[in-house]
Image (cartoon, rainbow, N blue to C red; front, side, top):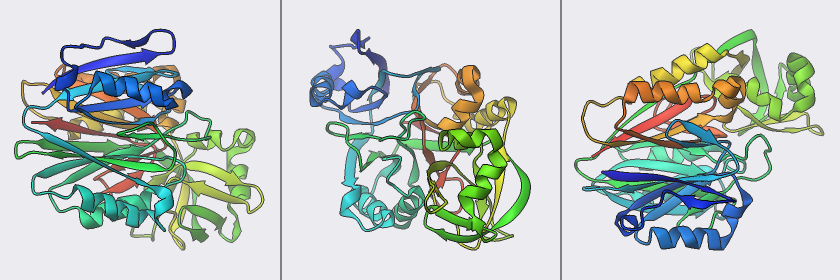
Length: 374
């Protein structure tokens, strides 16, 4: 495995590109936060640089290159695998009745004898990530790991974009399949948030929309907890996610707020809210978030002396809490995984990981990463 990492800015264009190696790359992952990146010519330039590569990417709430987080630019990591084949598939949200069926369709298209890992990049605002994860889990066989994330749009919540072998578009889910007998993928996922306040009953929800808690309007109750932060919803909701579980014996999952509806007094989350289940608000501190980023890294640790790719997806809510200390969660990952790790990824509206209720589960407010070695 050989790699290069480059950065684009409105002022300087792409910096660090190795023209000699460009044709040798077979995977390029791009994360971006600039409207210029939506221009077809911008993508065509990237394709000219890497004519033989699968090119995929997503809009971000912070793009990661090594241990640096950046906004209003784009970053790309180009990989030349020695023994690994790369394939991509993509689907439009509008073509499916639900996201579980979309996940099934993606999984079937990528299914293959030597498939070892699937990395998902999904529209972050129009997709129910829980349904998507269930569909992928249903169709992909044991031994194939699944990770990924939901595209971001800073704290704006306006529109999110996915790049799948073409110009970035809204309403798209892309999947990158990695194939090879020698390929090893090891993932980790950890949060660092704690519950507070009373546990309450979810009395009405549909999919990822929560209408009532203890028979009271969900938005009204949520605002009463947030106090002065309520004026900045939905953005401030990233600081106060919700823990949900199906019943008293179920394992809790974290859900992040995406949107509010004043008319219906409802809350829309990135993943399913179980009707009849239980919920509690959550909070955290900077030390806990950094510590749990380290725990995720340890779970994905490998012992070898060659370069390996690390794809990380961290929630935008973590970035808001950490503020200027945000890069410390990347630095602890670097410290644990070592200098041979090629770090790239993005801050997201949701993370897909193997940890949870099925082989692939939607999480929020986690640091999720996968180490890939051939």
